[in-house]
Amino acid sequence: MEICRASRQLPPINLRFDQKAAFRPATVRCNILNPKENGKLSIGDQMFILGMGFVGQFFAADLKNKGWAVSGSCTSVAKKKKMEELGYQAYVFDANDPRPEILEILKHHTHLVISIPPLKGLGDPVLRHKGLVESVLKDGTLRWLVYLSSTSVYGDCGGAWVDEDYPVKPSSEIARARLSAEEEWLCLGYNLGIAAHVFRLGGIYGPGRSAVDTILKQEPLSKGQKTRLLKNYTSRVHVADICQALHASISKPSPGKIYNIVDDDPAPREEVFELAQKLVDGKFPGRGKKLYIPPERTESVVTEKSSGGEKRVSNARMKNELGVKLLHPTYRSGLQSIIEKMDSSLLPSSPGS
Image (tube, rainbow, N blue to C red; front, side):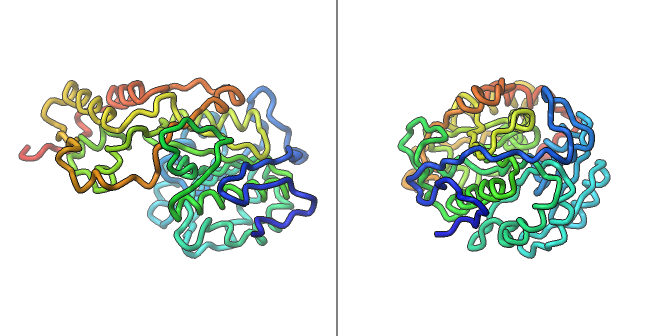
């Protein structure tokens, strides 16, 4: 299986799901602009975010507040207009029909976040043209990139604690595609002398996307959500802490490194929804619909397993090497922060009101 073509000998890559990736440090290319010093912004730094979704928009706003020039891609003209109204240079990128022109835009940026999931049967939409990607970017100013992956690449680990050296055994097609994309982006970074990283994210939540929001929207749980409620462990991370980790990596790049980006508490979703219900009932009495369904009343769900698998994901490397101090080490802090900032006037009307 060919992962990449390197101009020099490449160290072993995770060719099989039970092998560990091993990369020698690549030389970070900083000859175009001054490198970061003590985490300070260098003149001319520009960030491109491939996929301005939930994480992408949150990080873009954070970067903008810190003085960065930020551009990104979205999937429609309507979203492009919205991004431009927020002050970002936006470009439409169709993952099903990627246009090479976007590569010419990427080459003029210094930093890149890839937040586009792989497609079934196609894999990473950008790396479908990896030869062209490499040839265009080699003469550009890009010097740092991170691919946002998922802890789903570990598969079912029987509830064990897993770190970045734990054998990966993805069980779904999408998880296998994510693992392949991880390898290819790291390989691309190595070939180009770019500090490339992989962030394996836990379940992402934050303002507008949390158990609190699910309850307030009063929509029934999907089959998948009901199934995940039965898991003993779910590793998650607040979007603000993802941003913290991204900033830390920019300030302290470590080419070829993989990091688990999760909080300290891989708690079951049942506990999360129970707390969310209490918080909603306390601040907005009568506005939230109780959504949790006890397992004994969902016999058809009990026999099914979540595609993510049972595992507890360790964040020790993120803390020790990147120096990240979590804003929300558990879901308790995260949900409390979300509901404290909610305005009742902005909530959807309750039925019958």
